[in-house]
Image 1 (tube, rainbow, N blue to C red):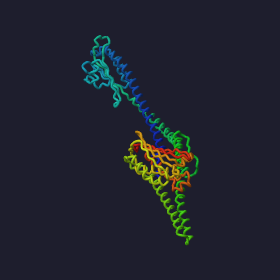
Image 2: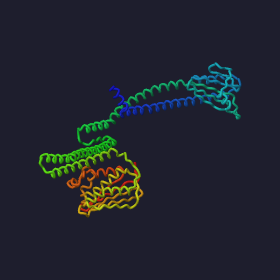
Image 3: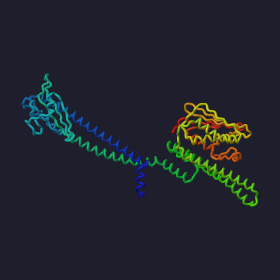
Image 4: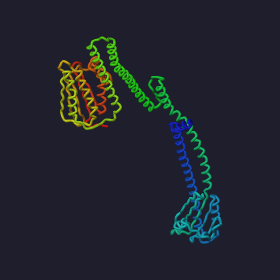
Length: 482
Protein backbone atom coordinates (compact mmCIF):
# COMPACT_ATOMS: atom_id res chain seq x y z
CA UNK A 1 0.00 0.00 0.00
CA UNK A 2 2.86 2.34 0.89
CA UNK A 3 4.63 1.53 -2.38
CA UNK A 4 1.45 2.26 -4.33
CA UNK A 5 1.11 5.57 -2.50
CA UNK A 6 4.71 6.50 -3.32
CA UNK A 7 4.13 5.55 -6.96
CA UNK A 8 1.05 7.77 -7.24
CA UNK A 9 2.93 10.57 -5.49
CA UNK A 10 5.69 10.24 -8.09
CA UNK A 11 3.15 10.25 -10.93
CA UNK A 12 1.75 13.55 -9.61
CA UNK A 13 5.19 15.05 -9.02
CA UNK A 14 6.84 17.79 -11.07
CA UNK A 15 9.79 15.49 -11.68
CA UNK A 16 7.59 12.89 -13.41
CA UNK A 17 5.90 15.54 -15.52
CA UNK A 18 9.24 16.97 -16.61
CA UNK A 19 10.41 13.48 -17.65
CA UNK A 20 7.20 12.84 -19.61
CA UNK A 21 7.46 16.27 -21.24
CA UNK A 22 11.08 15.58 -22.26
CA UNK A 23 10.11 12.21 -23.77
CA UNK A 24 7.20 13.74 -25.66
CA UNK A 25 9.44 16.55 -26.90
CA UNK A 26 11.80 13.85 -28.18
CA UNK A 27 9.17 11.56 -29.75
CA UNK A 28 6.87 14.05 -31.43
CA UNK A 29 9.47 16.18 -33.26
CA UNK A 30 11.48 13.07 -34.18
CA UNK A 31 8.43 11.41 -35.70
CA UNK A 32 7.43 14.57 -37.54
CA UNK A 33 10.94 15.16 -38.91
CA UNK A 34 11.46 11.48 -39.75
CA UNK A 35 8.17 11.11 -41.58
CA UNK A 36 8.76 14.43 -43.31
CA UNK A 37 12.15 13.31 -44.57
CA UNK A 38 10.80 9.92 -45.73
CA UNK A 39 7.86 11.57 -47.49
CA UNK A 40 10.15 14.11 -49.15
CA UNK A 41 12.46 11.33 -50.32
CA UNK A 42 9.53 9.35 -51.76
CA UNK A 43 8.11 12.37 -53.59
CA UNK A 44 11.57 13.36 -54.90
CA UNK A 45 12.38 9.82 -56.06
CA UNK A 46 9.01 9.52 -57.81
CA UNK A 47 9.46 12.91 -59.45
CA UNK A 48 12.88 11.93 -60.79
CA UNK A 49 11.58 8.55 -62.00
CA UNK A 50 8.59 10.17 -63.69
CA UNK A 51 10.79 12.77 -65.40
CA UNK A 52 13.25 10.14 -66.66
CA UNK A 53 10.55 7.78 -67.93
CA UNK A 54 8.50 10.59 -69.44
CA UNK A 55 11.55 11.90 -71.29
CA UNK A 56 12.25 8.46 -72.79
CA UNK A 57 8.56 7.93 -73.55
CA UNK A 58 8.32 11.20 -75.48
CA UNK A 59 11.33 10.23 -77.59
CA UNK A 60 9.75 6.87 -78.40
CA UNK A 61 6.35 8.49 -79.09
CA UNK A 62 7.97 10.91 -81.55
CA UNK A 63 9.81 8.04 -83.26
CA UNK A 64 6.59 6.02 -83.53
CA UNK A 65 4.77 9.04 -85.00
CA UNK A 66 7.60 9.72 -87.48
CA UNK A 67 7.57 6.12 -88.71
CA UNK A 68 4.75 4.37 -90.51
CA UNK A 69 4.26 1.95 -87.62
CA UNK A 70 0.83 3.39 -86.71
CA UNK A 71 -0.39 2.84 -90.29
CA UNK A 72 0.39 -0.87 -90.02
CA UNK A 73 3.69 -0.95 -91.82
CA UNK A 74 6.07 -3.16 -89.84
CA UNK A 75 9.07 -2.82 -92.13
CA UNK A 76 12.01 -1.22 -90.32
CA UNK A 77 10.18 -1.28 -86.98
CA UNK A 78 12.67 -3.63 -85.35
CA UNK A 79 14.87 -0.79 -84.19
CA UNK A 80 11.87 1.08 -82.79
CA UNK A 81 10.56 -1.93 -80.90
CA UNK A 82 14.05 -2.63 -79.59
CA UNK A 83 14.11 0.82 -78.02
CA UNK A 84 10.67 0.19 -76.52
CA UNK A 85 11.82 -3.11 -75.04
CA UNK A 86 14.97 -1.46 -73.73
CA UNK A 87 12.82 1.13 -71.92
CA UNK A 88 10.80 -1.60 -70.26
CA UNK A 89 13.95 -3.48 -69.33
CA UNK A 90 15.70 -0.48 -67.80
CA UNK A 91 12.77 0.69 -65.72
CA UNK A 92 11.17 -2.73 -65.12
CA UNK A 93 8.03 -1.65 -66.86
CA UNK A 94 5.54 -2.28 -69.64
CA UNK A 95 4.72 -0.31 -72.79
CA UNK A 96 1.51 -0.39 -74.79
CA UNK A 97 1.11 1.21 -78.19
CA UNK A 98 -2.56 1.98 -78.85
CA UNK A 99 -3.99 3.13 -82.18
CA UNK A 100 -6.79 5.62 -82.76
CA UNK A 101 -9.38 2.84 -82.46
CA UNK A 102 -8.35 2.15 -78.85
CA UNK A 103 -6.79 -1.14 -80.01
CA UNK A 104 -3.48 -2.31 -78.61
CA UNK A 105 -1.17 -2.89 -81.53
CA UNK A 106 1.90 -3.67 -79.45
CA UNK A 107 2.38 -4.96 -75.89
CA UNK A 108 5.88 -5.56 -74.55
CA UNK A 109 4.44 -8.33 -72.39
CA UNK A 110 2.65 -9.88 -75.40
CA UNK A 111 -0.46 -10.33 -73.26
CA UNK A 112 -3.01 -7.85 -74.62
CA UNK A 113 -2.13 -7.58 -78.32
CA UNK A 114 -5.11 -6.60 -80.49
CA UNK A 115 -7.26 -5.97 -77.41
CA UNK A 116 -9.24 -2.80 -76.85
CA UNK A 117 -8.33 -0.49 -73.96
CA UNK A 118 -10.55 2.31 -72.71
CA UNK A 119 -9.81 4.38 -69.59
CA UNK A 120 -9.88 8.00 -68.47
CA UNK A 121 -6.16 8.33 -69.09
CA UNK A 122 -6.45 6.92 -72.62
CA UNK A 123 -9.37 9.19 -73.46
CA UNK A 124 -7.46 12.24 -72.18
CA UNK A 125 -4.46 11.24 -74.26
CA UNK A 126 -6.63 11.12 -77.38
CA UNK A 127 -7.54 14.71 -76.56
CA UNK A 128 -3.86 15.62 -76.60
CA UNK A 129 -3.24 15.53 -72.84
CA UNK A 130 -0.47 13.77 -70.95
CA UNK A 131 -1.42 11.93 -67.76
CA UNK A 132 0.60 10.52 -64.87
CA UNK A 133 -0.79 8.24 -62.14
CA UNK A 134 1.03 6.89 -59.09
CA UNK A 135 -0.46 3.76 -57.50
CA UNK A 136 1.21 3.59 -54.07
CA UNK A 137 -0.62 0.40 -53.14
CA UNK A 138 0.52 -1.60 -56.17
CA UNK A 139 3.78 0.34 -56.46
CA UNK A 140 3.83 1.48 -60.07
CA UNK A 141 3.65 4.66 -62.13
CA UNK A 142 1.43 4.77 -65.18
CA UNK A 143 1.85 7.45 -67.83
CA UNK A 144 -0.22 8.04 -70.91
CA UNK A 145 0.82 10.43 -73.72
CA UNK A 146 -0.50 11.05 -77.24
CA UNK A 147 1.42 10.03 -80.36
CA UNK A 148 1.49 13.10 -82.62
CA UNK A 149 3.62 13.62 -85.72
CA UNK A 150 5.77 16.66 -84.90
CA UNK A 151 5.72 17.67 -88.61
CA UNK A 152 1.90 17.64 -88.72
CA UNK A 153 0.59 21.17 -88.30
CA UNK A 154 -2.90 19.87 -87.45
CA UNK A 155 -1.51 17.97 -84.49
CA UNK A 156 -3.64 14.97 -85.25
CA UNK A 157 -3.47 12.24 -82.59
CA UNK A 158 -2.39 9.02 -84.27
CA UNK A 159 -2.58 6.95 -81.11
CA UNK A 160 -1.13 6.85 -77.69
CA UNK A 161 1.70 5.40 -75.67
CA UNK A 162 0.85 3.86 -72.27
CA UNK A 163 3.90 3.27 -70.07
CA UNK A 164 3.81 1.49 -66.71
CA UNK A 165 7.00 1.33 -64.59
CA UNK A 166 7.57 -0.36 -61.26
CA UNK A 167 8.52 1.63 -58.13
CA UNK A 168 9.67 -1.40 -56.14
CA UNK A 169 13.22 -0.10 -55.89
CA UNK A 170 11.91 3.21 -54.51
CA UNK A 171 9.78 1.30 -51.99
CA UNK A 172 12.79 -0.82 -51.07
CA UNK A 173 14.95 2.24 -50.46
CA UNK A 174 12.11 3.82 -48.51
CA UNK A 175 11.79 0.73 -46.32
CA UNK A 176 15.54 0.77 -45.65
CA UNK A 177 15.44 4.47 -44.76
CA UNK A 178 12.44 3.84 -42.52
CA UNK A 179 14.41 1.24 -40.57
CA UNK A 180 17.31 3.65 -40.19
CA UNK A 181 14.95 6.45 -39.12
CA UNK A 182 13.29 4.16 -36.57
CA UNK A 183 16.67 3.29 -35.03
CA UNK A 184 17.68 6.96 -34.95
CA UNK A 185 14.35 7.99 -33.35
CA UNK A 186 14.71 5.23 -30.76
CA UNK A 187 18.25 6.37 -29.92
CA UNK A 188 17.12 10.01 -29.72
CA UNK A 189 14.27 9.02 -27.39
CA UNK A 190 16.66 7.09 -25.12
CA UNK A 191 19.20 9.92 -25.04
CA UNK A 192 16.60 12.63 -24.48
CA UNK A 193 14.80 10.53 -21.86
CA UNK A 194 18.06 10.01 -19.98
CA UNK A 195 18.85 13.71 -20.28
CA UNK A 196 15.27 14.49 -19.20
CA UNK A 197 15.66 12.38 -16.06
CA UNK A 198 18.92 14.12 -15.17
CA UNK A 199 17.49 17.53 -16.00
CA UNK A 200 14.30 16.91 -14.00
CA UNK A 201 16.36 15.81 -10.98
CA UNK A 202 18.53 18.92 -11.31
CA UNK A 203 15.56 21.24 -11.85
CA UNK A 204 13.58 19.90 -8.88
CA UNK A 205 16.50 19.98 -6.44
CA UNK A 206 15.74 23.59 -5.41
CA UNK A 207 12.21 22.57 -4.45
CA UNK A 208 13.62 19.71 -2.38
CA UNK A 209 15.89 22.23 -0.67
CA UNK A 210 12.86 24.43 -0.16
CA UNK A 211 10.87 21.57 1.39
CA UNK A 212 13.78 20.55 3.64
CA UNK A 213 14.29 24.15 4.70
CA UNK A 214 10.63 24.53 5.63
CA UNK A 215 10.75 21.22 7.52
CA UNK A 216 13.84 22.38 9.44
CA UNK A 217 12.19 25.68 10.33
CA UNK A 218 9.05 23.86 11.38
CA UNK A 219 11.11 21.50 13.51
CA UNK A 220 12.93 24.41 15.14
CA UNK A 221 16.37 23.42 13.80
CA UNK A 222 17.40 26.99 13.06
CA UNK A 223 16.19 30.56 13.30
CA UNK A 224 17.78 31.73 10.04
CA UNK A 225 15.56 32.87 7.19
CA UNK A 226 14.77 30.39 4.43
CA UNK A 227 16.60 31.22 1.19
CA UNK A 228 17.02 29.04 -1.93
CA UNK A 229 18.60 31.16 -4.69
CA UNK A 230 18.56 28.66 -7.58
CA UNK A 231 15.59 30.25 -9.39
CA UNK A 232 13.84 33.57 -9.34
CA UNK A 233 10.66 31.70 -8.38
CA UNK A 234 12.31 30.01 -5.38
CA UNK A 235 13.69 33.37 -4.25
CA UNK A 236 10.20 34.90 -4.43
CA UNK A 237 8.69 31.90 -2.57
CA UNK A 238 11.37 32.18 0.13
CA UNK A 239 10.81 35.91 0.50
CA UNK A 240 7.05 35.43 0.83
CA UNK A 241 7.57 32.51 3.23
CA UNK A 242 9.97 34.52 5.39
CA UNK A 243 7.53 37.41 5.36
CA UNK A 244 4.74 35.06 6.44
CA UNK A 245 6.95 33.52 9.15
CA UNK A 246 7.76 37.01 10.41
CA UNK A 247 4.06 37.77 10.70
CA UNK A 248 3.45 34.44 12.43
CA UNK A 249 6.24 35.16 14.93
CA UNK A 250 4.75 38.59 15.62
CA UNK A 251 1.31 37.02 16.03
CA UNK A 252 2.74 34.32 18.29
CA UNK A 253 4.51 36.90 20.42
CA UNK A 254 1.32 38.95 20.49
CA UNK A 255 -0.67 35.86 21.49
CA UNK A 256 1.76 35.02 24.27
CA UNK A 257 1.69 38.61 25.47
CA UNK A 258 -2.10 38.62 25.25
CA UNK A 259 -2.37 35.40 27.28
CA UNK A 260 0.08 36.80 29.81
CA UNK A 261 -1.89 40.04 30.05
CA UNK A 262 -5.20 38.21 30.36
CA UNK A 263 -3.77 36.02 33.12
CA UNK A 264 -2.40 39.05 34.92
CA UNK A 265 -5.59 41.12 34.53
CA UNK A 266 -7.82 38.29 35.71
CA UNK A 267 -5.49 37.34 38.53
CA UNK A 268 -5.16 40.86 39.97
CA UNK A 269 -8.81 41.28 41.12
CA UNK A 270 -8.79 37.73 42.49
CA UNK A 271 -5.62 38.50 44.46
CA UNK A 272 -7.18 41.69 45.82
CA UNK A 273 -10.34 39.84 46.86
CA UNK A 274 -8.26 37.12 48.54
CA UNK A 275 -6.27 39.72 50.48
CA UNK A 276 -9.47 41.48 51.58
CA UNK A 277 -11.13 38.19 52.55
CA UNK A 278 -8.05 37.06 54.50
CA UNK A 279 -7.99 40.44 56.25
CA UNK A 280 -11.64 40.04 57.30
CA UNK A 281 -11.03 36.47 58.48
CA UNK A 282 -8.01 37.57 60.52
CA UNK A 283 -10.13 40.20 62.38
CA UNK A 284 -13.14 38.36 63.88
CA UNK A 285 -13.90 41.27 66.23
CA UNK A 286 -13.62 44.03 63.64
CA UNK A 287 -16.37 46.67 63.61
CA UNK A 288 -19.27 46.42 61.16
CA UNK A 289 -18.13 49.54 59.34
CA UNK A 290 -14.80 47.87 58.51
CA UNK A 291 -16.62 44.75 57.28
CA UNK A 292 -18.83 46.89 55.06
CA UNK A 293 -15.82 48.76 53.68
CA UNK A 294 -14.00 45.50 52.86
CA UNK A 295 -17.15 43.99 51.29
CA UNK A 296 -17.55 47.13 49.18
CA UNK A 297 -13.96 46.75 47.98
CA UNK A 298 -14.60 43.08 47.16
CA UNK A 299 -17.75 44.08 45.21
CA UNK A 300 -15.70 46.60 43.20
CA UNK A 301 -13.10 43.94 42.37
CA UNK A 302 -15.87 41.56 41.28
CA UNK A 303 -17.33 44.26 39.00
CA UNK A 304 -13.88 44.91 37.58
CA UNK A 305 -13.37 41.18 36.95
CA UNK A 306 -16.80 40.99 35.30
CA UNK A 307 -15.99 43.95 33.02
CA UNK A 308 -12.68 42.38 31.96
CA UNK A 309 -14.43 39.09 31.15
CA UNK A 310 -17.24 40.85 29.25
CA UNK A 311 -14.73 42.85 27.19
CA UNK A 312 -12.75 39.69 26.45
CA UNK A 313 -15.90 37.90 25.33
CA UNK A 314 -16.81 40.85 23.08
CA UNK A 315 -13.35 40.85 21.55
CA UNK A 316 -13.27 37.08 20.96
CA UNK A 317 -16.78 37.11 19.56
CA UNK A 318 -15.82 39.92 17.21
CA UNK A 319 -12.77 37.98 15.99
CA UNK A 320 -14.79 34.84 15.30
CA UNK A 321 -17.74 36.54 13.59
CA UNK A 322 -15.81 39.07 11.52
CA UNK A 323 -17.54 37.89 8.38
CA UNK A 324 -21.00 37.72 10.00
CA UNK A 325 -22.11 41.31 10.26
CA UNK A 326 -25.81 41.96 10.59
CA UNK A 327 -25.91 44.81 8.08
CA UNK A 328 -28.98 47.05 7.96
CA UNK A 329 -29.76 50.67 7.16
CA UNK A 330 -29.39 52.71 10.36
CA UNK A 331 -30.21 56.34 11.05
CA UNK A 332 -26.86 57.45 12.45
CA UNK A 333 -28.25 60.71 13.85
CA UNK A 334 -30.74 58.85 16.03
CA UNK A 335 -28.13 56.24 17.00
CA UNK A 336 -25.67 58.90 18.21
CA UNK A 337 -28.43 60.63 20.17
CA UNK A 338 -29.24 57.35 21.93
CA UNK A 339 -25.57 56.74 22.76
CA UNK A 340 -25.16 60.27 24.13
CA UNK A 341 -28.35 59.94 26.17
CA UNK A 342 -27.15 56.64 27.67
CA UNK A 343 -23.73 58.09 28.58
CA UNK A 344 -25.08 61.40 29.92
CA UNK A 345 -25.29 60.14 33.55
CA UNK A 346 -21.59 59.20 33.45
CA UNK A 347 -20.75 62.64 32.06
CA UNK A 348 -22.83 64.33 34.78
CA UNK A 349 -21.04 62.32 37.45
CA UNK A 350 -17.65 63.44 36.05
CA UNK A 351 -18.86 67.05 35.60
CA UNK A 352 -18.11 66.78 31.87
CA UNK A 353 -20.14 68.68 29.30
CA UNK A 354 -21.38 66.36 26.53
CA UNK A 355 -22.20 67.94 23.12
CA UNK A 356 -23.50 66.33 19.90
CA UNK A 357 -23.38 68.16 16.56
CA UNK A 358 -24.96 66.71 13.40
CA UNK A 359 -24.27 68.54 10.14
CA UNK A 360 -26.75 66.59 8.01
CA UNK A 361 -29.05 63.53 8.13
CA UNK A 362 -27.03 60.33 7.68
CA UNK A 363 -28.30 56.82 6.95
CA UNK A 364 -25.68 54.06 6.59
CA UNK A 365 -25.54 50.29 6.09
CA UNK A 366 -23.90 49.07 9.34
CA UNK A 367 -24.16 46.47 12.07
CA UNK A 368 -25.96 48.53 14.70
CA UNK A 369 -24.75 46.52 17.71
CA UNK A 370 -21.06 46.58 16.75
CA UNK A 371 -20.98 50.20 15.62
CA UNK A 372 -22.78 51.23 18.82
CA UNK A 373 -20.15 49.41 20.87
CA UNK A 374 -17.34 51.18 18.99
CA UNK A 375 -18.77 54.71 19.35
CA UNK A 376 -19.78 54.10 22.96
CA UNK A 377 -16.22 53.10 23.85
CA UNK A 378 -14.80 56.24 22.24
CA UNK A 379 -17.26 58.60 23.97
CA UNK A 380 -17.03 56.80 27.33
CA UNK A 381 -13.21 56.95 27.24
CA UNK A 382 -13.40 60.64 26.39
CA UNK A 383 -15.59 61.19 29.46
CA UNK A 384 -13.61 59.02 31.88
CA UNK A 385 -10.18 60.37 30.95
CA UNK A 386 -11.31 64.02 31.04
CA UNK A 387 -10.78 66.85 33.49
CA UNK A 388 -12.55 66.47 36.82
CA UNK A 389 -12.73 70.12 37.84
CA UNK A 390 -16.01 70.81 36.07
CA UNK A 391 -14.41 72.40 33.00
CA UNK A 392 -14.14 69.23 30.91
CA UNK A 393 -16.05 68.73 27.70
CA UNK A 394 -16.61 66.08 25.02
CA UNK A 395 -17.66 67.13 21.53
CA UNK A 396 -19.11 64.52 19.13
CA UNK A 397 -19.85 65.46 15.51
CA UNK A 398 -21.45 63.60 12.58
CA UNK A 399 -20.95 64.46 8.92
CA UNK A 400 -21.05 62.70 5.55
CA UNK A 401 -20.29 63.01 1.85
CA UNK A 402 -21.46 60.90 -1.10
CA UNK A 403 -19.31 57.90 -0.07
CA UNK A 404 -18.49 57.97 3.67
CA UNK A 405 -19.85 59.21 6.97
CA UNK A 406 -17.51 60.75 9.52
CA UNK A 407 -17.64 60.73 13.32
CA UNK A 408 -15.30 62.91 15.35
CA UNK A 409 -14.92 62.54 19.13
CA UNK A 410 -12.98 65.39 20.76
CA UNK A 411 -12.24 65.86 24.45
CA UNK A 412 -10.40 68.23 26.76
CA UNK A 413 -8.79 65.44 28.73
CA UNK A 414 -5.26 64.54 29.78
CA UNK A 415 -4.15 63.60 26.24
CA UNK A 416 -1.93 60.79 25.02
CA UNK A 417 1.86 61.03 24.62
CA UNK A 418 3.04 60.79 21.02
CA UNK A 419 5.09 57.63 21.66
CA UNK A 420 1.96 55.86 22.95
CA UNK A 421 -0.36 56.74 20.06
CA UNK A 422 0.72 53.80 17.89
CA UNK A 423 0.05 51.32 20.72
CA UNK A 424 -3.33 52.48 22.00
CA UNK A 425 -5.24 49.87 19.92
CA UNK A 426 -3.23 46.97 21.36
CA UNK A 427 -5.07 44.72 23.77
CA UNK A 428 -4.48 45.55 27.45
CA UNK A 429 -2.29 48.52 26.56
CA UNK A 430 -2.73 51.45 28.91
CA UNK A 431 -1.16 54.89 28.68
CA UNK A 432 -1.58 55.63 32.42
CA UNK A 433 -2.01 52.28 34.15
CA UNK A 434 -2.63 53.69 37.61
CA UNK A 435 -5.32 56.09 36.39
CA UNK A 436 -6.89 53.39 34.20
CA UNK A 437 -7.11 51.09 37.16
CA UNK A 438 -8.75 53.81 39.23
CA UNK A 439 -11.53 54.40 36.69
CA UNK A 440 -11.99 50.69 35.93
CA UNK A 441 -10.40 50.54 32.48
CA UNK A 442 -9.52 47.12 31.06
CA UNK A 443 -7.27 48.15 28.17
CA UNK A 444 -9.58 46.42 25.67
CA UNK A 445 -11.98 49.21 24.71
CA UNK A 446 -9.98 50.72 21.85
CA UNK A 447 -9.06 47.25 20.54
CA UNK A 448 -12.78 46.43 20.35
CA UNK A 449 -13.51 49.81 18.73
CA UNK A 450 -10.83 49.40 16.06
CA UNK A 451 -11.94 45.84 15.24
CA UNK A 452 -15.53 46.95 14.83
CA UNK A 453 -14.59 49.83 12.53
CA UNK A 454 -12.28 47.67 10.41
CA UNK A 455 -15.06 45.09 10.05
CA UNK A 456 -17.12 47.86 8.43
CA UNK A 457 -14.21 48.59 6.03
CA UNK A 458 -13.62 51.85 7.84
CA UNK A 459 -10.64 53.64 9.39
CA UNK A 460 -9.82 55.34 12.70
CA UNK A 461 -7.11 57.87 13.51
CA UNK A 462 -6.10 59.52 16.79
CA UNK A 463 -4.58 62.97 17.31
CA UNK A 464 -3.55 64.11 20.77
CA UNK A 465 -1.50 66.55 22.81
CA UNK A 466 -0.65 65.91 26.41
CA UNK A 467 -2.70 68.16 28.68
CA UNK A 468 -4.77 69.50 25.76
CA UNK A 469 -7.02 66.57 24.85
CA UNK A 470 -7.52 63.88 22.24
CA UNK A 471 -9.42 63.67 18.95
CA UNK A 472 -10.55 60.42 17.29
CA UNK A 473 -11.56 60.62 13.61
CA UNK A 474 -13.68 57.73 12.29
CA UNK A 475 -14.51 57.18 8.61
CA UNK A 476 -16.93 54.43 7.52
CA UNK A 477 -18.48 53.76 4.06
CA UNK A 478 -22.17 54.59 3.76
CA UNK A 479 -22.68 51.30 1.90
CA UNK A 480 -21.05 48.19 3.30
CA UNK A 481 -18.55 46.58 0.91
CA UNK A 482 -18.52 42.80 1.36
